[in-house]
Length: 299
Image (cartoon, rainbow, N blue to C red; front, side, top):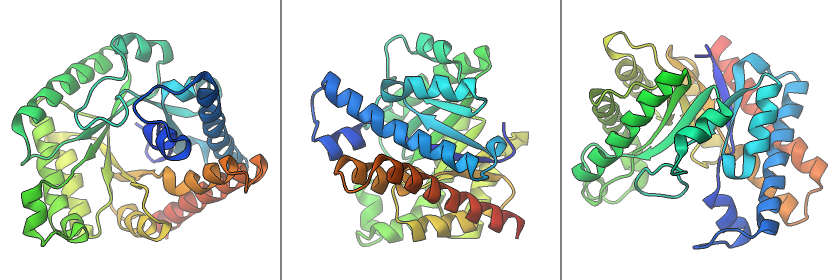
């Protein structure tokens, strides 16, 4: 595991195809696929430009999907960039593997890490949780057998009752209820014999909540690290989360995607930005978060 992991995730599939191309309930055409691949290439080129501008390669990495980013994964691997490959099917409420022969797909790339996004609420649907955990344990066992790191993105969505307990205010749920549910969820996952190397978690507002998360991911001598995800939030919110995390041993970085690249790829798609401008915007935004993290960490 890297000591620090400042990741640029752009494994978004449904978000891009639906919001930028209006594709819903069908596969993209070959032309649409090529267009989405070009958007991902812009993000990757922005990442590489940030490296040229001084972002430290050994602390960084990319997270991208195979569907639109296989060539990017291969190029990055060849160039010694840390790569994380997405394993889950996009846009599902219940974790499903992206491909029926998922093991072969991972072995064909042999990334540094394989990543899953899992929506799990420890106080939610227990049958759903059990089904997901069974698949996730199988994945963990397989990754261990081939020497690929396990990166686990846990998303905790409120149940109706939980939301009602804070008067329907999502911000209050995020601040008051979600952090404890995250700790509970991590323990449930660990109790099922699933031990990721890295946890990709939603940001928390309070230092003590971040410390509680680190205590749980490192319970019983574990050495896992946490990276904070951006969740498509505005820059100010992400900055707050990173400032909290950077000071806490065990929080080893971030994975901020849409906040970095969305305006750039949207601008390129709508022809308000040239390709070069879009690439520069990605590089600038990404470098800004890296500089913030490094400044807070070492300040």
